[in-house]
Amino acid sequence: MKLLIGLGNPGAEHARNRHNAGFMAVDAIARTHGFGPWRRKFQGQIAEGRLGTGKCLLLKPATFMNESGRAANEAVRFYKLDLDDVIVLHDEIDLAPCKIRVKTGGGVAGHNGLKSLTRHIGNDYARVRIGIGHPGEKSKVHGHVLKDFTKSEQVWLVPLIAAIADAAPHLADGDNANFMNKVALGLGGDVKSSTSPAKRGASPSRPSQRDLARKSAAPASKPDDPQPATPKGPFARLRSLFGTEKE
Image 1 (cartoon, rainbow, N blue to C red):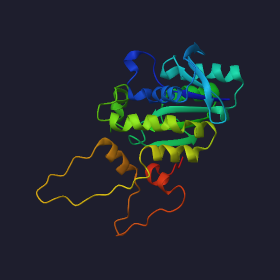
Image 2 (image 1 turned 90 degrees about the vertical axis):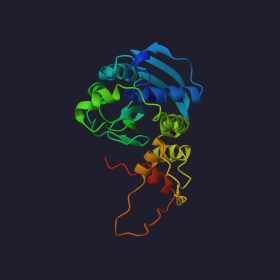
Image 3 (image 1 turned 180 degrees about the vertical axis):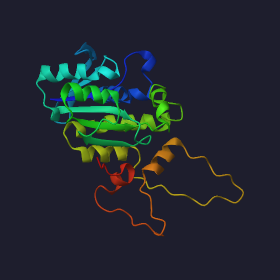
């Protein structure tokens, strides 16, 4: 069985916060794949169902972000799970909006939810990092993550959460490459963007948040390369949208 933990803070006042991207993702997974109703257990809320080839338990800790590990520890101990069976979905300020990464282990980058998980269950669990962007100054991080996603951010957030939910069976099966590829396709990663010359006298249109996120995800060309080489291979579109995880 796989345990998918979404990180966030409980309560209606936090439901749309950037810090609750993990809650949003597991809620969408439950809806998309017909999981049972949410019920109280393990100091949180759980929903049971199937993803991919096996059973899956979704968990939303109700202990607030800083104590997320307490709820996770209860579930891990009850089902006698290995850390290979644990996948955590969480917000990530060190990724640009609309970008995601999948990694196992590594640092927690100051994320209090991950700190608590590592303290209670260990560090070698898988993480789906959902980019929400950095406010630019360390002193503004707390306010940034505890504020709601803006209306303009909904342009990329809604399709991203839906794409994560749709691709979740691959994630549960440990097929991270196909998970990332399906998310990319769900966001239109198979459509090449192009820029048409502006008509004379016409004002250029303002790019949307989603367009900006896609542009930031594209690999930059070197100044002295007039015609950058087009990536080739089965995962070319995936690399162009999400980049390569170096951690």
